[in-house]
Length: 288
Image 1: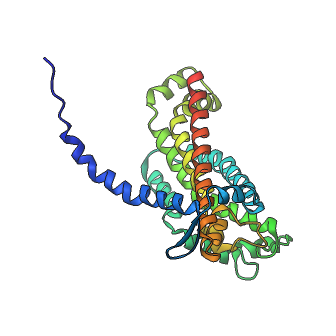
Image 2 (image 1 turned 90 degrees about the horizontal axis):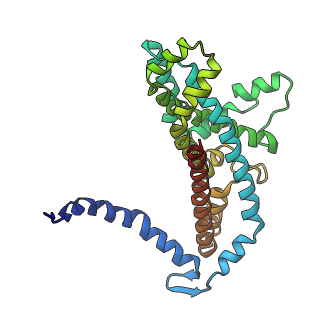
Image 3 (image 1 turned 90 degrees about the vertical axis):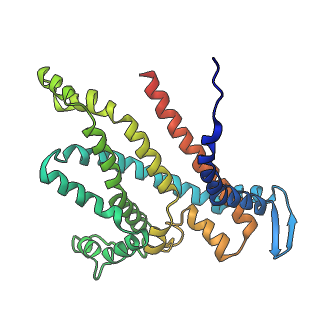
C-alpha cells in the first residue's frame, strides 16, 4: 500500500530558509546589482554591464593582492597542517595533563582578532616588545614597521600562533577516535612509530585534515583584522591582502561599483579554490 508523503516537516525548515534569504541571498543580490551599475548617489545610478569586472580583472591592485594572498595562504597551510599534526601526536591522551594541554591550546583561539593584532604589535616592537627586542639582541636587524620581509613574516607567525591550535585540536580529536585495537595489533606486529603513523593514524585523519585544510584556507584567504591592526597593510603594500584592498576601495574611496565587482570575484575565487581542494583530496582518497 502506497503511503502518502507528509510534507508538513518542511515547515520546520522554513525559518532557516527565511534567515538565509535575509542574511545571505538578499545582500548577495544587492552586491550583484551594484556590480553592474555606476552609482553617483541615492537614486542616481547607470547601468554599465560588465565594465567593472573587466576593469577589476585587469587591474594591478587585484593581481598584486591576489599573488600576496595565495602566497600567504600557501605558507599558512604548509606550516600549520604539519605543525598541528605534530602537536596532536605529542599531546598526552589521558589524565590531568591532557586536560591542561587542551585548555592551554585553546587559549589563543579565544582571543579576538583585533586583540591578537594589538598583542603582536606590542610583542614585535624592538624597544618594549619581548620578541622584537630579543631578535635585536641576537644581532638581527628586526623592524616590522620598515622592513617588508619582517612585516610579512610577522603576520605569518602571528597567524601560525593564533590558528595552529585549531588544527591541533581537530587532529587530536581524530587521533582519539582511533580504536585501541589498531594500536594493539601494531604492537603485536612490532610496528615502528613511523609505521603506526603512516598506516594507522594518517589514514584515519584524512577526513579531519580535509576540514582543517578547508577551514584554514578560507580563513587565511579572507584575513583582514590582524594584519590591519599590526601593520596597516604596510610597509608599502607588503601585507595588503585582498580583503584590505576591497575595504579601501569600498569604504576609503567609496567606489561601490568596482568594490561590488571585486567582492564577487573574491567570493568566486574562494569558492573555486575550496572546491578544488575538496575535490582533489576526496579523489585521492577514492583512488586508495
